[in-house]
Structure formats: C-alpha cells, structure tokens
Image (cartoon, rainbow, N blue to C red):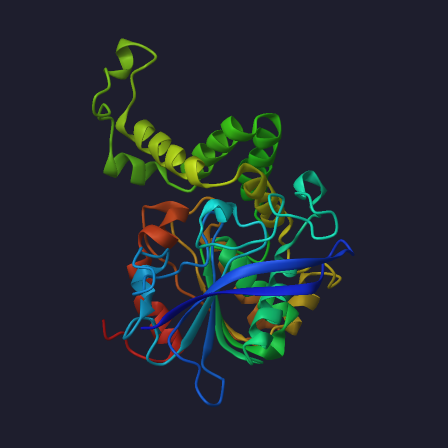
Length: 359
C-alpha cells in the first residue's frame, strides 16, 4: 500500500457565512487511482483525529481506521484509491504531519494569526473544500464517502450537497444533524470551557466528551469499581480515584497535550451547526436530493447518536424512493466503538461495497 502526504491549497473557498478565504489542508492517499478515475473513496475524520486514517511505510503510526484500510481490508487499497483529508480547524494542528487552516494559522491578508477573527465554518464548508481537493486530483465522482462521528456528518453532507458525485455513503455513529445532547453537552460545553480557560477548558471538554462517548455498562465491564493503580481508595480522601476515573482523566490529558484549544472550539462549533436540512427548506427536501446508496451504522449503546435516529432517517430516505440500510453495531463501548471496535465494521462495510474481506 502506497501513501503520499501532500498539501492542497485554494484561495477561493466561499464559506456559508459569505466570506471567501484562502485555505490549506493536508491529505493522505492509499492505493492507486485507476485509469477511469472512478475508484476513489474519501474518508472523513472524526472530531479529534486528522488525515492519518491508516499506517503506511511513509508513516507507520496506526491510523484512526487502521483495521479498515489496506490490501484485502474493507476499504481494499488493491481496489480503491483512498483519500483522507484534514478538515479546516483540525484540532491536530500541532501535529507536524497534519495541515489545516484555522485560528492558529496566518491570515495572508494581514500577516498575523487569525485568532478570534477566523470566520465560522460549517461541515458544508469542509465538504466544498474536499470537492476542490478531489477536482485537483482529477476526481469528479467518488465510489464512496465514509466516516465515523463528525466524519459521518461530512459523508451525509456529501450526499445532499453533491448528490451526483458520490455513489455510496457510509456514516458510523453519526446522524443527519447534531443531536441535542451532542450539541449541548459536547460541543457547546467545550466552547464555553475553552473560552473561559483555554488550556484547562480543553482538558475539561475532553473529559466530558470521553465520558459521554462511553457507556455505563462499558465502564463497569472494563474497570468496575476497582481503585486506580497507585491511588488510595476513593473513600480515603479526595485524591483517591476509581480506575474508570483515572482512565478517562489520563486519556483526556494525553489528548489535551497534542490538541489545540482554539481549533477544538472552532471544530466543536462546526459540529454543533451540522444539519443537512439547512438551506433546503426542510429535511424532506434535503432527503429528496440524495441519490447515493446509504449505509448507516449506529452503535447500540451510543447515547449521543442512538440507533433510533438512524432508523428514522433511513425510513424517510426510503419513503422518497432512496436506498438506505441500517446495520446496528451491538457494542457496550458507546459512541467510541466507531474507533475502538473498528475491526467489527469490516464485514458490514465490505458487504455494502460489494466485496469480501480477505484480511
């Protein structure tokens, strides 16, 4: 499997707020584009990830959908040309292998950092940027767009914004709009916390996100009420930690050390605004635009995007003659199953794409 890390730049990205900006994003590719240029798959990363979807000789670090990308895997790189791009305001801006335009980058018009002057962005803005990137590669139509969580937001937005440019769409642990719980308890909570204290607020936001992305059953099964290693029993004093507390805190601290608060807040705002119906009068009008075949994979224990939402959306798509399939991933891991148990997505994704998994 080949991998190429490259940079795409445009000076003509018109945003939903009406501004036109210059934008740069990094992207990785896996596999080869065929002569007909019709075997391209776009993978859209979730909230705290980047364009590094899978490992390669050029970058051996495991990617966020490592079990799914490669020869013989669900996104078979012997068959598909896989493209994974950074989003605008990617929180991973501190990662040297990621490239993104956002508050921390320099405004070419002023020579200074954008900071708070960076305009509001939407999922649809990112999809338009991805369309420009793909056009630069000579790709006019995608075989598939796929992503988990907020990556699924982008995949579903593709189905509405560019209905004739994508054949199949896969959204995992996601939805056609930001659910109220996700919007308030994850996105707005992160924005408010970071505004009040960037460094401490980011840590608080990540703890909350990781907690809500889990489930009670999963935390109980994995850690129960064990005392954290090297910690006094929680009943002995305020420094004591249960194992599940220590695990969430440690993961939040790890992420806070590598993610950027300003970019995280901007990305949270983008996710909060997600709604494929916006600008289409209502959801019924938006759904009637969809020409792609949809695969929705909700997680049984996900409280942020419960399976009922996927079933209702699929029913509406089918009511207007569209094609939509729902395959619930039965898991205790909650929203995080989309990444933690990515290997379990291989069979339904490969079946949807029409080929067996060889590895």
